[in-house]
Image (cartoon, rainbow, N blue to C red; front, side, top):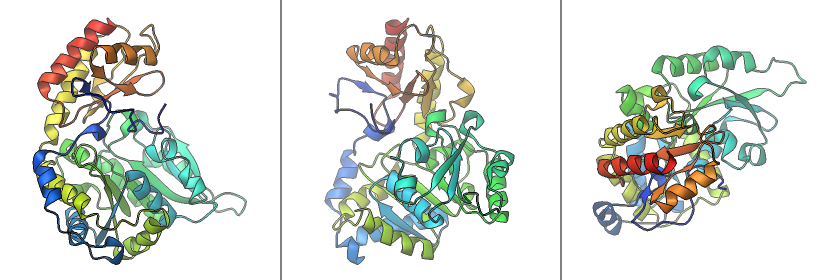
Length: 356
């Protein structure tokens, strides 16, 4: 239906309560003002001052040497995979991970690599699982080139890597001579849940991608952070993938505004998701693990609901509530800054009444 659970269909009217994804957020009037006032230049020449400020600020926040602004999270992830690997290698990742399922097989197409997916309970891998899947140093095996983690884990319901687990994976991988990349599209949500700054929870990763266009409310854009040498090489592949933008400071201004104003409000989205998950756990045929609702995403098991996910989505749409497909005959709901708590309460009532 879509290439990704965050790629949604034609925009509905404001009459809908849109819980398909936090990508549907629109820039606030204040963010639009920042975009209107942005100072711009040619970024391919390195002359857009607003993009330069955004990249510098992102590096500061993550405690990294450098950062690069890219149009999408997929581009950021795939540039990282390209730089960390060589053709013919394997990339270890969780089987529901975005890099494996929703990025158009680009690790094979662009980097010449094969995914080595592993099932992690609640989307979280542990070092012993990864260690067992690292290829032996034998010439007729495809060699492991990279470990890629995802936090929060989108299709596992927004679950967060515990700090000790992430650190153990990074330490083990590094001891084995392997880099570790983090798909941190919603890493600020993870930071809220762990009550730790992003610089602390990502300090052992070799590269991190994070999105501005999800819970942070910017219209477009992601950043890839890493060492100065890594980001210098990333600029080559950003250009190769068509991501060399010109006067894109108008987009970077939205990102700067998001980092300054929209990070501290993320706990509101978590509260809304927690409330909605509890409400929906009473719907006949729904299976929701409340322990996994750690951030702003709810994965709803609906195999026993008595009708197909498509039928349920259509029924809810007719009542003014938009959800999207989840895992294994299920649904997904995502809370965000453009849906108020009152709308979440209303959505809960509508879903219960419609599907019960």
